[in-house]
Image 1 (cartoon, protein in one colour):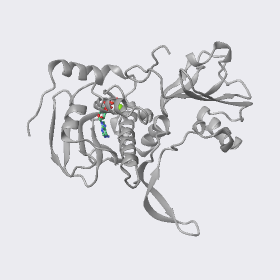
Image 2 (cartoon, protein in one colour):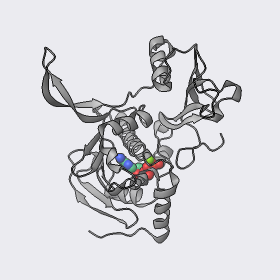
Image 3 (cartoon, rainbow, N blue to C red):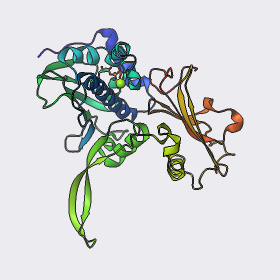
Image 4 (cartoon, rainbow, N blue to C red):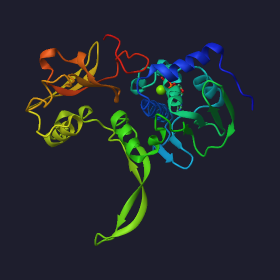
Length: 341
Ligand code: ADP
Ligand code: MG
């Protein structure tokens, strides 16, 4: 097993990637989950055309405190040895973008495009191990890397097709990386960034059991789905009740009173987008303070890009709340900003 070196420029690029592209370390989970979702989308697409039986697609998260390892597995299309080499050994190489180009008509739900998101995991991990088995192949391979030092690829075992990404978290220091192993944090990150990923994101959690008459009865492990999958704004207006709109509004925007008015819009044209807007029934409590952030939440293909995008609202409508979702935004590389659309 030969240790291969990143080329000198790539090493610097990787360093840049890891340390300066993202303002927020926690987005690594969004990136890894988005890749898993893309991988499942691709297999889903292939199984539609191959006449393969549908399978139970899912993204599984596992946190092992003993080994400080956070694992994200999918049962998507997987990667062959040469794809591991090409996609994870070449910065800015996006297998997903290639796929999108080939399968243009169906692939609009795919999230990846820049070929850098994966490396964001080195912001929080000292070592990353990826075990992958490509759909239709019997062999699996393991890609592992400690970041700028290089990576290696060797044969491995995996029961079914798909990919497992294991992140050995960095030691705690100024930053408490072990937080990413806490159920609470994982839940928060998934619902914040990846709530509308179209496949279930599951995790085993320990729950207190109770007997029939409500007495404590030890603990049990249950598998829970963390994401809600279908955003209310993607459902047909007639199928969503006012209550559902209201509870979405109060959860999302921490409002106590139901909104005075709900506005939905579906645009298809030069830019395709869906918008769900709310006129609050009272001004936000901090509306007249400097802390108030005007703007709408911006999603791209169901993945949260910006919490408050000011440019989506004229100043005089600053009190409005809502979300805008579009799959054809030109994002900058960190997917944190728009490029003047
Ligand atoms: P992007 O998602 O923008 O293409 P990434 O750096 O996140 O870039 O990933 C690079 C490439 O690695 C992807 O385009 C995809 O081809 C491959 N890849 C990453 N994660 C997975 C996965 N879980 N399953 C299959 N392929 C993956
Ligand atoms: Mg990606």
